[in-house]
Length: 218
Length: 218
Figure 1 (spheres, each protein chain N blue to C red):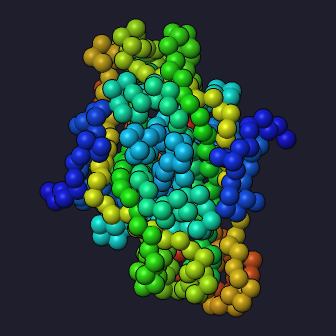
Figure 2: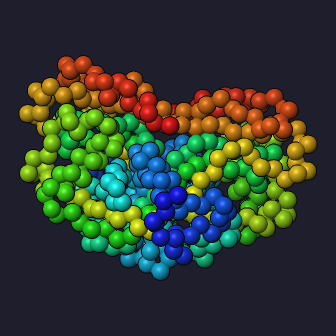
Figure 3: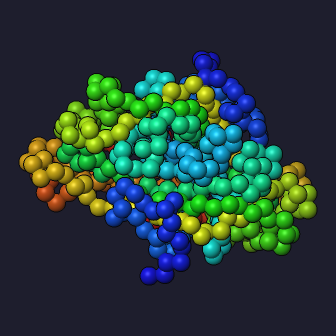
């Protein structure tokens, strides 16, 4: 088990510690499967949580957006942040309300962003984000012009302090409750992909990577 | 348009303001459709973002969990928080990498939680959370015992300062890019529900509200 992420007091899973994981492969797999993450920042003591697209490149996460946005404007100032990716796998229906739960996999990364100013790194990061969201897309879409590059803020977050939390499997009821006449089990959930919808002015046939999108996704 | 949520500098959508909404029905609909929200809190200057189940009851959100967890333990101290619900509706593939986007609806609620100590309100809140996640379930599952009630922390967040941000529809490319031989359009995404999986010791048939789960969900 490769585990070079630090287990710190901040990332240690306190509640139901058995569901916690500090294993790199586990954390990376969650980050790679997610599409949208939730970035947390603080401004004047008020936390803000904003959904964003992202990509992982090795031990680094890249986020991007407009420098005019609250999130990217703040992150470029290299403040403490949290980045959380949650995959919802199912609802867990126990015989008692108390033991209801969800099956999920979540990864939490803590750290300080670095604004990416190097042109090559910035281009590579933007390409990684497009590839993360739609593998195969970056070879086809027109890359950013200098003006577009200027209008995009990219920040990098080192994955050094991170943890995962996972639950899977059936409900676990209190012993006496198993005799209750209540259905119990799991309702599996997954992100489903619909048929691609070409825009009105598109005359190009649907490419393979769009047609087969998500087949490899859990 | 009912809009008694305050539009404050904190909740004002800065970037792509046209995607912002402060309309109560819009915000409530997002909160009601979501299953998992992301709660943001601050501890020692470090933001944390944690996924949780929740329910809306009128102008109030209820969250619950173990008093031993970082999140609920902190929230019960009535600190500033952010609660964000994001619904991912699709990926938007433009002809240029720069104009790629996602179709989504997100709601952000800012405020200070109140720990719910009143027994009746606590019971009602827990019931609301079960009902929010699986409508019909709370009538069947065994309700919480005094001991279980004691072992559960419930907090209420007034929805007073909130905003939504929404994007829908096809990509919007730069004029000159429309002639590029690149497929462009939307890849719709939705949360899909699989067939219920009864637990090993369950002899009760699948109830109607489980069988038809999610049919009303977008």
